[in-house]
Length: 199
Length: 199
Image (cartoon, rainbow over all chains, first blue to last red; front, side):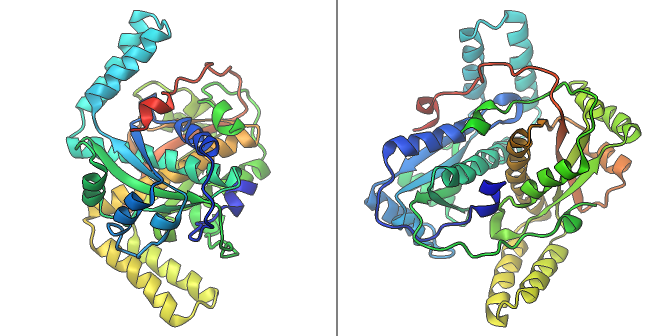
């Protein structure tokens, strides 16, 4: 409760770089996120060199969000839509765990059937939804580690793909700037009451 | 880290009902979730009477998931697509906070323009993505409160809408069963290594 209540979108960072060990802990928290059928359809690009951050910042025009270049690390959370590879990876992981063949083919068959029932556009949307679960872990996790983070969806995915040289199956979905906060939370948080959400 | 590492999809629950006060704490953690432009495009239906749970369970055929009827509380996390109402609610909340008119119209104008640029299908997808951020808070939050929870997406949304008598703008997106765990975690968690996720 303390984490979800007090974290906020940190837009100003001081100049310190977050140690790689701490970044790794944050990435660990992200990768522990659950996903439907446990397919983990996400990839993460970590950007921490100023030149790339500058280039990406100019592809984030909507709100001229300076945190893309001023943060310590920028996480580009991407939807992975390469489902043949995703299912093959799952199968290999089950083999490595010595899951019985029958159970293994049940699980991967389920996943294959589910994916086959979707259009490519629906597959992308489905991956994007899962990425948003991981996003929550990124934002809560950053706060828990004493860091600040800000989610951003207003950017040009095609430009990001070009600058980061992404294959077409990897679709940038949401950005998370990470660093040490140098601003104050805009208290109190504007959230609707339970009465406005329940029905 | 302890939360994200140790929570798991709890499929068996004991018979105890979770106290309403604890359910309310969980709902509070869910409503604190962030969302793009802070629009909070979600609604939650809490179901805890056995008759409705039984009816819903028969509309959750894919894996015959008994936790829909055996859990203490079933949370139906829904995407809210009534954007005129969402933006109007935002405007009223900003007025209540005495946000200056100029800033207020900037923010609501931004939201309106953004929503107007999407097809109804894209608006639904966008709301669904935000719901998945809230879902993460639900799953991590349940564990933090000593509860167990299981996310489910394999259900018939049209049947859920009919049984719960939902308006067409409220779209059931993901279910979360909540209760006291009566099973054991399937240790260790199957998650891909950072090397498999980073690129």
